[in-house]
Amino acid sequence: MKKKTGVYGVIYIALLCLMPFSNSVIAAAPQYIPVDAEIRYLPAYCAAKLRGIDEQRWRAIIGKDFQHLHHMCYAQNARRKARTERDEQSRQYLNSVALKEYGYMETHVSLGFALLVAVYLEKADVFWSMKQNAKAEAYYLKAIKFKPDYVKSYASYSNFLKRTGQKERAREVLEQGLKVKPASKSLKRRLKKLKDDI
Image (cartoon, rainbow, N blue to C red; front, side, top):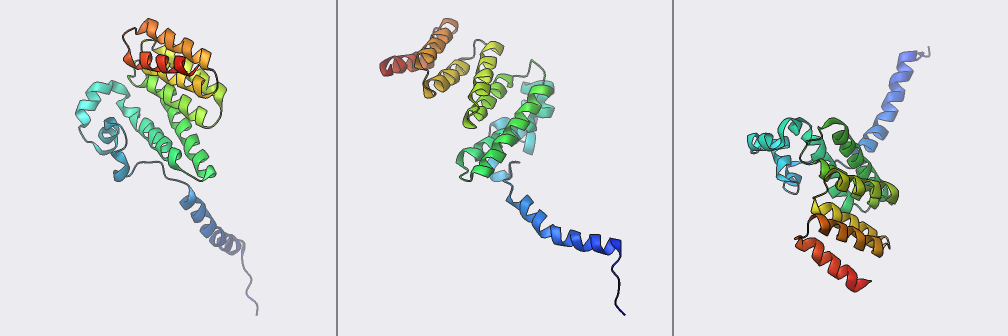
């Protein structure tokens, strides 16, 4: 007599068939949560947040937003790995993870968060790497507006403009930065080099 397979038996068999495929998909996704060997490539506050190294000092520096800091570290590690990833699909995945984690930081930290301007700049860099230039420019401008005296914002934005063929605008941004920070050697050096190239 032929044994009939019940509904639950069919479901069980179907799940068994899907499991190897599911596992392979999960295994194929690049991992972005830092392992011990990757911690050293990230800022010191990541070792504090993710491994408890010098944690109390960093809690005092960062303040109440320390509780969210692991998302910043996940984003930075994903971005770091995306830069060297050769597979296009994996690179896009890592960049999308970085955007998601930076997005979390934007919506959860206070406006007094010491690294918020870095969130804007790093998010701009991710958009640029994904060839979403309009979004990248919006975040470079957001960083400048948020903290007008932060030299790196002008340097990063001018570099973006220069690399996208907008040298005159890049010069204007550097000059704008020097009005705010006239003693900045970095901006002076960039401006001189840019003028030589124009």
